[in-house]
Each structure stands twice: as C-alpha cells, then as structure tokens.
Image (cartoon, rainbow, N blue to C red; front, side, top):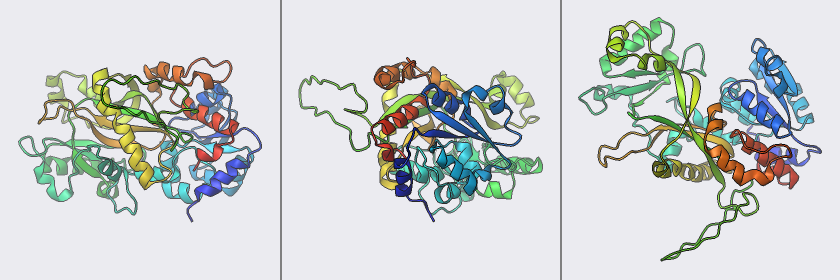
Length: 421
C-alpha cells in the first residue's frame, strides 16, 4: 500500500529534536554529507559492503554514522528503518537510491520521511514499457517544453543523413548495471541493427534492455543541465508583482521565506563528461574515421563540469523551470520539493535561426553534479539566504546547502510537515 504523505508529516511533527539527514551511499552522498555537516545537521550514510571504504576512511569526517549493509535493499528492513526513525531521520533521495531500492519500494515500503517528491521519483524512468503513471516525457509534453521526437522501432526508416531524422540516439541501459547507460548513436536502420548485434555479442545490452530502450532524434547543440531547487515552505505563498501599463517602479522584498517572490531558485548550469565519447571527440576527424570501427564508443557518465551561459540567452532556458514545476504540482501534488535538473541541448532552430532549448531528461532529485558549486549562482544565492546561514558559515557553496537551510528553517518555525512526503 502506498505510503500516505500525512503519515510522514505526522512522524516529523513528533520529532523531539533536530532531524538527522539520511544519505544513500552513492551518487551525491559526499556532497550531501559535506553540506549537512557544514550546516550543523547530523547525518547517517548507508553503504553497501564492498563500497564502504571511502565513507569509512578518506571521507569519514563528513559523516556521523555509517551503516554498512550486505545489499542495498537491507535499507528497507524494518529494524533498520526503526533505528533511522529513532534518530529523527529524513532522507534526501538521489538517483542511486531510486535505481537500487526501486521506485515502488520507496513509495510503498520506505516509511522514512523524504525531503523531496516521493511519488515523482518513478517519473524519471526512461523505459518505453507501458506505464500507469505520467513519466518525464509526459511531464515535458504537458508543460509545453520541447523534447526530442520519439522514434518507434517500426519507423526506423526515417533515420538517415538525407532523411527526416539525420541522427538518432538509442537510450538503452547496460545489461549488467541498470544505473549506467549504454547509449549509442545511429544514422540508419541498417546501422541500428548492426550496432545492436555487436553490443549484444559483447554483453553490453540484452533483449530486455533493448525492448525497454527509447529511441529519439539526436539534438545537435551544446548540452546543458539546467539545475534548480523548489522550496516546500514557499509553495502557494508566493507574492506577485502587479505591472501596469507605462513605467513601473517596483520595490523588491529580499527575504526568501517571510516575503517570497518565488518558490524556486536557479542554482546553475552543468555539463556531463562521458567516457569514452568525450575522449574520442577530442581526436582529429581523420583519426576518428580511422579508428571509429575498431573502438566501441560509449556514453557512460564519469563526471561533470560547471557551465555558464550568456545572460541574454538564459531567459528561455531558465524560464522552462516554472513550466515544469507548475505541471508537476498539478499531476503529482504537492509537486517538486528539493533539487532537480532539466537536462537538454541548445540547437539552432531551423525556422527562426535562433538558439532553441530541447529537454531530453529530468532529474527529480539531487542532480549529482558537484561542479555546480563553482557556478556564479552560488554568490547570488549567498546574498539571498545570508540571513539564514548558521553561525560560522558565510557562504553557500553547494546547491545542497539550500535543502539544509530549508530543513533547519522548517523545524525552527514548526513547519516541518510542509517539506516532507
């Protein structure tokens, strides 16, 4: 049975002391540990045996307690959950948690309050299998944000250099590791079948992962991850400016919680580093042609870099955030809470000859991009939330600082039920 939000709200309302941040030991655990410790909150990291070294050794100063489990789903054990609740645990979810525990298990069996959107986590699933819920592509469509055209396996003949879709991207997961991608590009129907045969032979994919794969047009343009944070405390409390005709002089309040003019913040752009495609693309074109057939090109995410964008071009891209948040709240009330990311590309629109914004993935949780900490937005957000920084902390240095600030503020004002699901 699906866990009701009211149950989680009651649990946090009964907490007698400060909350403890519960962290799934992968993906963005180090970022979350650093931020929670810096902001004065205790934390617990749950790690799988064999992957515990860095949390117990070089990164141990970031965590108060380390729980080593034999398998990830041990986190769902009633005894483990009971101990987490005894410590006033609140989970900040990441992608690894969703993959290894399962979205259904998180919705039905993980009876720990989540700072985030419990029911939206399943929407990130990019498989083409029949769903009884609206996934990220449905959210994009209903929000009016452009996304790549999907190509069914019955219409692969539209792919070709001189055809409707010059290049397509096949979004398929690795056969032996569902959290990692085995994405590949294809330029024709014959090329698709040739690559599939080769990848199956190498064990990279199998019939099941291929059946669930999504094929879509490849967007030719630089990639940007547009990252944001949605406040739980400010939902339905946002003040709006009335702008009349003529010249308007508007006084802006600068308190983000007492007089909010927005229930979300833009936290910065990032870009992915992928192996081995990033290295291959660094080679001269003539070398690429010589070795292209001898090397299997993969797009496995290995890291991130921070990115900036011209201010005049940011309006449309960042403006897609409220479109997404508005539709998310209608379909999955209370909507998005916490960090999220819109992952897309900026091609040149053939009709307008201007940059366009096409989103191909949504992260419904911490994006897992520590490089965002170097974005110019960190200075801007420091100015905005300076009043709410704990003593001894002078600057926001990570997007994950925002959830910590809101959690502290929620418990301080007795509004903790507004930030959990």
